[in-house]
Length: 309
Length: 186
Image (cartoon, rainbow over all chains, first blue to last red; front, side):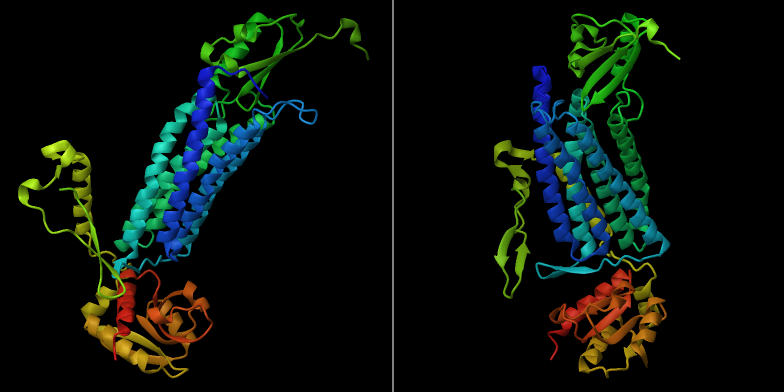
């Protein structure tokens, strides 16, 4: 739906889309480098699969941004804002899958005591330990996600964008797996066969934790829960403030908030509807975020004679 | 002068990468747009230098988790399984001589069916199994198969191959190196 967004928010949206395109390009190059450096090595396969999965949040973000501003039609009378809710679920599933996959892979390697073979590779006519090539590729794979993730987080907060936030968490997962991979390959080189799997296991819990958090936030929105914070399952601060403000202005009203993508809808039950209402005047917090509240609907009180038995 | 790699075509089929000849002392580190005496990216250079030092410090990577190569060198004994059927050809013998030469160890050979030898290898009771194996043998998930570079094929045919225990990376690298050099042998 074509919401009247302030110019700075529209600029942030453009910036977010640029960052998502950059993510696809950079992380695509990381996938290519990792694939070239892999050379049939089982140890690198996990890192490669993880990098391919990490493209999903950025891709669904761009798809959602394409559909979100579409005007309502007869078939979609509420517009397509909720595409963003769906996208945030897909991104959260991808992030959780990365964490779960890493744990599974690390635990099976440790339990079956699978000794990873990292032998030689022929490069420019020289026989080189394959581990050096892997370390170089993994070191490269750390650089883009550190930069992109740091650029995305503040934009995601300003836009209250769950998909972009999950995407930033995915970049955190990317650079963490890259560093763990370097430590793991060096460990294997020093003769500790369990080093790679152990390093992956340690970081996989933190990634799965981020994934499950994103999953809880995304599902809360899809089942019409109150607006959640971006990074944990608690009700967002601005939503709490709005509930308090509405309860103060409409004593006795049953205040319910829900969220469609980045927007808040409020329902006030048990009070008389207003004839005219300036939504911005209801917003209690930072006026720069007043665009979040897009609808207030009233459910009038039932007539007292309506009770029957 | 800025660090630059020059690429010259090697005599054979490989490209050779060489550093340009050492720069004269006072020109080192100078970059035209910075002026004489200024070093470009000093912290980056320091970081790279430290990284190179760190890598040089562990240049003898990889090591074997179960110490196969060290043990062979220390004990002077190389425990070899020779797959009896089909009869190994001359390649296996020449290869074994090369590996023995490279480790300075004397081969102690047992001969038998492939299944038994590969099981012994997997459990670390042999160091090396030689004989005819399929490059795509299901044993690849249990042992590491080393092929002669010219024999790398996905065809389901038997080729002379060496097998080593998974993860013994220094040992496997030595086996791969000797397999690569085998081609030059008469």
